[in-house]
Every structure is written in C-alpha cells, then in structure tokens.
Image (cartoon, rainbow, N blue to C red; front, side):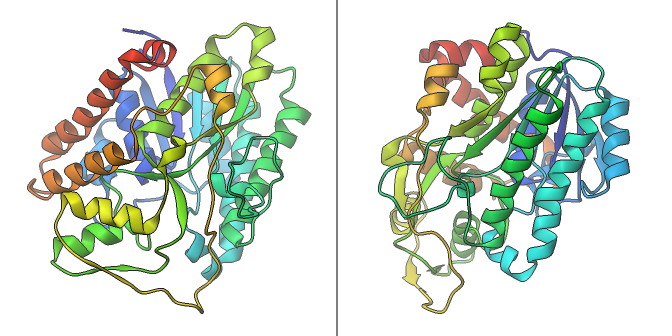
Length: 369
C-alpha cells in the first residue's frame, strides 16, 4: 500500500459539498491531514453532516469570495496539496443568479490562485472545473483538452472563464515556482449522498422514496455519467504524480486533464432513469418543457491524455455505476441520521470496493490505494 498520503497536509475547498465530502473522507482514509474551507452544506440532508466530517478534519466555514480569508487560511496551513472544488455548481441556478455564479466560480478561483502565492513549500494544486467548460457544438465525438472553451449558460461560461484564469495565473506567476497547478474537467458525477435540487439522480431517489413517479424534464439529453469515485480517483492520482514527479515532468502534468467515463457510459437521461428502476421499483413520466432554459443535449469527453500521461482509466461501467449508486441510497435509507459510524462504514465500503476493483489497473492502483 502506498504511503504517499500519510500525514500529508491537504486543503480542500468546497469540502461540505457532495464531491467534497467523498474526497475528504477518502483523504482521511488514506491518512492525510485535511483542512476544509467551504460554505455550510447547502442541502438537507447532506453527506458532510451524515458522515460527521466536521469533527474529523480542520473544518472552516468561509466564502472563497473573501480574499483575505482565503489568503490567511492557506498561508497558515502551508499545504502539501490543494483540491479546489468550491463553486456554484448548477446550470439552472446560474440563470437565476448569474452574477453570483461568476463571482464565485471566477473571482473565487482567482482568490485561491492568489492565496497560493503565500505557500512557501512544494505544493500540487488541482482545480476542479467541469466538462461544460467546452464550447459545446453538440458533436457526436468527445472533447479534448485542447478544444475551444465557451459556454451558453452562465454556469458553463463561468467555468470556461475559470479555466482561462487558471492557465493565466499558472503561466504568469507559477511557471518557475515550486507550486504546480492543474485543472480537471469531469463528467456528470453521481453517487450516494447527493441530495441537491434539480439533479436527476437525487430527484429520482426523492420520488422513489415516497412512491411518486420520477419527473424527467429532458429524457433524450445525453451525458457522460460516472460514479463520483472515478474522477476523484483521477484527481488524487494527478495530484500525487505532480508532487512526486521530476521537475522536468511537472510542466507536462500541471495542465488540463479530462476525467470522463467509458464511451459507452455516454447515455441518455432516459437510459439512466430506466436503469435506476431496475434496482428500485417505480415509474417515470416525461415532463419536457419546450420553454425551459437552455441545457446541452449532447456532451462527452476524450480521456486519452489521462490514460497516456497518468495511466488512468475509468473502472466502473454505466450499469455498475447505477447499481452502486442506488445501493448506497437504499442502504442509507435504513440508517438513523445520527449514526455517522454506519454512514461512514457504508461510504468507506464503496471506496474500498472501488480501490479493490482498481487492483488490475497497475499504475492507478499503486498510487491511490
């Protein structure tokens, strides 16, 4: 078992969110010291609270739009590694609050970049954006890291702008630094513990839990569905390889990377719902709205770069991803909300299963076990 993460000081922004909670628990499981900076959980319930992570990490409530706070918390911690996940993550919400979305996703990211100037030790920083940062032309083939950035909606465009800021700060201020910065773009991450509004899997689970039909607003839209552990495993692998690599290799790794699912996991929302219903009985109905705000219909990623540079490739296929996700929710529904130990056992069980399944993937399994 790799000892890399043992006692490493890791800072996670957005640690109270869905992906942030999974990542924080995984880092603790690997033996890291974790400091988290985030707003309070924005859902009830929340995975962060169910896991009782506030008592297990150096937990700070704060807004990444507060430049002085970010500088102080990062300078004081002097982290070995940083994962920046904090964001306004919802497309539809970005139409309601476009300025706040840009303020958080762009200026907040810049505040983290500026705070990195106060780190006085080697540090690998991974900035998480989204697959939606690409100028979506509804192509039938996937987007590569070199393709044009853009975005129709305020959320997608804000993430494209964040990518431009990351590249600019990396080139302008950190090209000769011991601080190395990468950005990562993942698909639609799903998994247990997501209770956000207006996300198809949480919406489906809420409906099934109360015996209602699942209302689907865009059944033919295609997305690159992947279990949350897939991109998180990629982030961990990338961060470690940046940190451990020879100086001449760091520049090739401190760039943008896609972490998407297998090609056959680019499936329609209808496929997703009907596969969920194979594991949890129920029904769904089409509630398409021709007057709804614009959302992309077709989007997928090419992950050749992650495979060739990192040895990373997705492990769980579409069916396995849905099975593990629904199983988590079904088992969680039987656990009392105050039993953090049982929620941790359930969640760590899936992490351990995923790591075990990586055993056949030589490089990846050696790095993140």
